[in-house]
Image 1 (tube, rainbow, N blue to C red):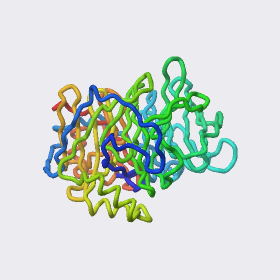
Image 2 (image 1 turned 135 degrees about the horizontal axis):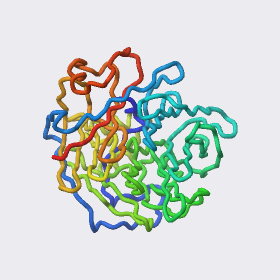
Image 3 (image 1 turned 60 degrees about the horizontal axis):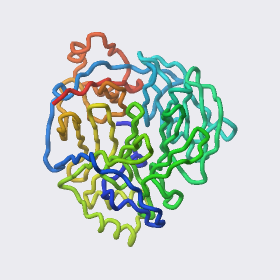
Image 4 (image 1 turned 120 degrees about the vertical axis):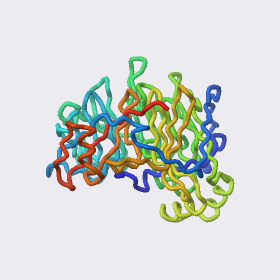
Length: 396
């Protein structure tokens, strides 16, 4: 699936109690464990599932394909007011499509000047201000664009250290920006996993001290998740998903208890301190040899938690957790007779629906899919843009 590059890979390696900085010793974060749910995951038990038993395929949306919008790699998708906002990691453009897949406009202000960016690390929509916020982690600045036509509105410098993931929320009649550090090779530029800033980017709260290997910090594809105005966060080197409360305290919401993968955290830290890998490739090789869990992505809706990860011994697997029933379903492969589908979600769009990507050459049986979705137009070339599949998760 597009977007599964090394800078999006993360590890489920350390218990929450070990979330301290190796190079700094800030005050330890305090968080509640009162309502924490533990989810056991036996990674060595191989499970097959039928696509139609897990999901209802509601719609397949073909994205406009032309010379001005050839998507190379989809890094992020956001759904807001019947529009899809798609970050193309290969071009550093944000393409905006309507609900039928028609291109409306794109943002491509690459450059060195005012209101221009060098690289889009992340973006989000300010629902109150009708703005698209773009984070340039290389130039360490934030640019706001209009969500009507994409023209630049304002530019603001950020911090002296690197942040490369964020989300915008509106609460108590004010806008807040929640920052985190995603994938980076820097290990001493920030003491905390989460920063809460006001609308002027003044940092109000620093939460959850991070742990550094001294070489690399890796995180999931989207470590910060927003369900309505509720924020959840999966830190680097953790198998605990935290929730950010309205009073700016943290709660340990879910603990993913893996069985069948390496959990010798003390040995990992000792190895990395003693023989720190010099490249991400070497780092991943060490983790593969030791069969550690690596998180690829996780998403949350009102009713479900969807976790996508990989191990050396078992490959890619994903977990669907139904909150109301406190029930978890671990899937290794998905059987489908008309669609080649890996099971990786890219975004949650409300009402327990997910967006997944389908490549034009992923159809196993177009005639069968046509019977399933009579209105779909399957007359396109294999080099067309990826399609968006809207899936509704079924209760189990």
